[in-house]
Structure formats: C-alpha cells, structure tokens
Image 1 (cartoon, rainbow over the protein chains, first blue to last red):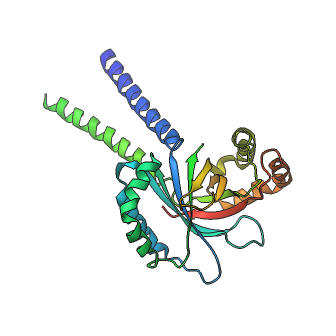
Image 2: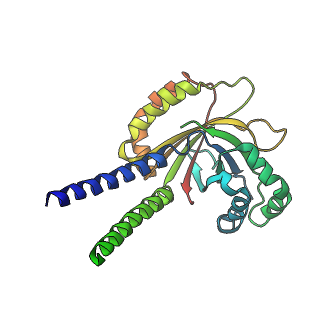
Image 3: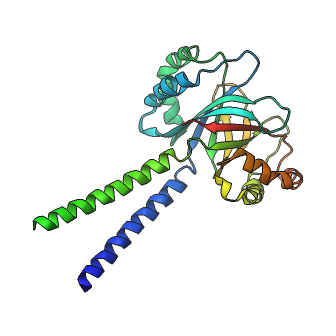
Length: 135
Length: 135
C-alpha cells in the first residue's frame, strides 16, 4: 500500500513537471526570433483573396524555409483602432524564423515564383518589415 | 506480467495523449483572437525609447485589460524586407484579446492617461490596426 502511494506520487510529480516545462517553453519560445511581416495596405479598389493566401501562397513560401521556420501566422484586418480612420491593412502574414540570413538564402532562388503568385490573390504591393521579438 | 504490460501501456498512452493535446492547444490558441496592433512608423527625426515602452507603458496598458488579455508582444523594427526601402516601423506592440468590445470598454476610462504617457517614450503618432487571427 505504501509502495503504491509512493509510485502514484512519483507519477503525479513527473506528470506535473512535464506539463509545467511544456507551458514554460511555449511561453518564452518567441523572444529573440526574427519576424518577417508582409503587410498588405488597404486602399480603395484593392482586393485580397484570404482563402488562396491561407491555403496556397503561405504554405508554398513556408515550405521553402525548412527548419529555420519556427511558425507562421496570418491575420485579417478588420478596422482601424482610431475612430474615423480607414483600415490600415487588409491582411498581414508573418514568418517567425531563427536566422534572417538563412531566410534570405532560402527565399532567394524562389523570389520570382513567389512574386508571380501575388497576382493569384491580390493587387496590393505589400510593405515588408524585418523585426526582432523583444517580448 | 501481462497486467504490468497493460498498465504500462495505458500510462504511456495517457502521457502521450496529454502531451499531444497540450501541444495542439498551444498551437491553436491564437486562432480567432482579436489583435490590437499599435504600429510606430519610422521617419527621419522620430524617436522611440524601447526600454520605457517595455518596462512602463505596455505593462500599464496591459494591467487595464484584465482577463480579456491573452498575451501581449513587443517587436523592434530592424529593416525593410525590400532592398533600398526605408524601415517601415520602429516598433510594434500587440495586445491579443478575446473580445474587442471588452477591450474598448476597459481602455475607454484610461485613454487620456495612455495618451499622456506617449510623450515619455516617443514622438511618433502610431497607426492602430484591429485584426483577427486567421492562422
């Protein structure tokens, strides 16, 4: 009976240790990463096909990046946060990578293919920001 | 012996199920959330004190948001991703919230205090985007 209690306690401890470590690593993983954000400014007459972007374009680019890619995200612009101002961006796609130079080396040979795909989902010329995750 | 094997198998299954669920929930947790992104455009003569922003301004605003706030992030602009183009943004702060109306209700009474704090870290008028996490 005592042994069973000890075994149960050890198992529970292992379980909670594993869980708390998992949680911690999920929380700190982004700090220090490089973000490449592709921002699509809104303007009258501009179009953006979110379904194509999500199911074709972003997965295509992501596949070029290999293990340097930690994750990628997509967001859809809803409104300006300042009343009576126009929507700033229709959409933003972000690649979180470990190394900017590895990103550039991976994208280089595919630049023409990536640009050629733009016409399949938008007529917007994107703004591209390279930034570092501070927090 | 057979019973031990079965118990071991069940424990292992429980363990891996727990882990894979944890991983999945960490991966999908952002989808559907509302992002309020405060983007600080770069221009000649513009300044931004990242230390003040990270240690004073963002924690102050975050504290107003309560349990509606899932997380907040800060990034530092490094360069344009397009050669020979100026840096688009010096910094971006983002609040990930569950409800836009709860965010607006929480910020409303503190809007003047938040705006008054701008001068302590920047002379930039930010662009604010409300968006939805698609992926």
